Length: 193
Image (cartoon, rainbow, N blue to C red; front, side, top):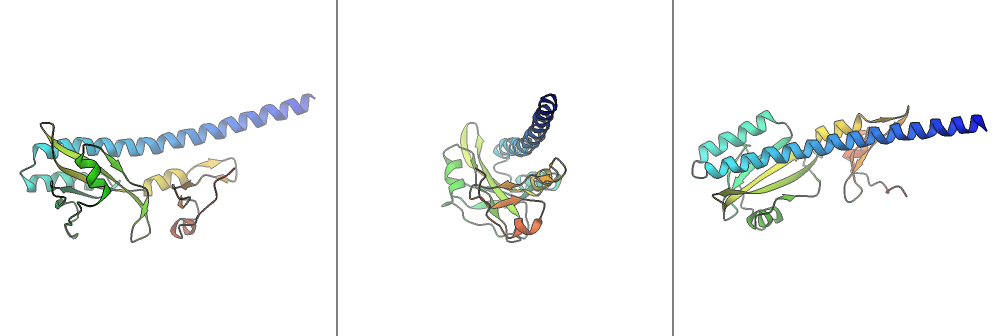
């Protein structure tokens, strides 16, 4: 009876430790996204002040991307949905007025997309916010978020000696797993019961 009680206590403590590991990692992931969103809120306020000066807007956006690798690309759109500046000088400025992110921002709401895979097969997501000046919407700030740092956080999680964590999106596609091949293949995993 004493051995069985001791074994149960050890199992309980191990499970508590594993749960704490996963909870801490989830907190890191949340902080990652919250930090990015906060940077975008600040940038959107700044762009509201700089609305007429496209060169200064571009400078702010480019500096944000250079200093924060979480951002793959950021652009500013006018009221008609036309991108007017971008952090990527090689990209074409597009008309995006029919896209969900633009419509949400134009009614004053922020938008976070589902996870998408880039042309290079890396997971990304989009965040948009309204750009306001004196409380009036003057445009939209759009950011493409690079999820490679989230992958690193998840891939670093160890549960016991052999256990690993993985991250899936809303469609059960693997976003992060120690075996990069499964991520690049966008393999679908069943949710555990």
